[in-house]
Image 1 (cartoon, rainbow, N blue to C red):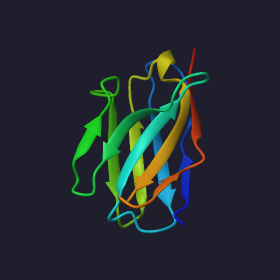
Image 2 (image 1 turned 180 degrees about the vertical axis):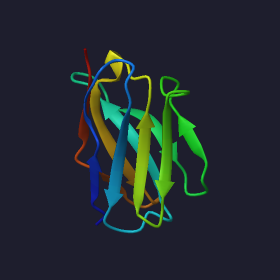
Image 3 (image 1 turned 90 degrees about the vertical axis):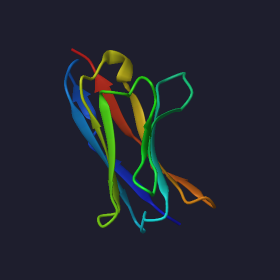
Image 4 (image 1 turned 45 degrees about the horizontal axis):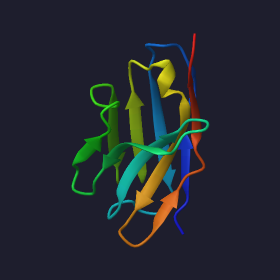
Length: 114
């Protein structure tokens, strides 16, 4: 079983930045890694995906503001979030998918408020 531990969330003012990290207990080399978010009362939405070949994909709301990256040697995936808006407030979850099994982290809260 792969354990995922997110960190880096917190309270930030509108326009600010945060960098989320997701550390895996096992190698992420062959896995597609993703970041999702879920606001209270809403469904969990895909934010960004880092494929094992290095390609990335973003939700429309994340394009131009968020950047996903991965460091396979550190078994870590990152989400750099810039120009944050109040509507970005949510719990952010890391996702591991190797085509056979899917794992989730416990989430880290991001609150954007003045």
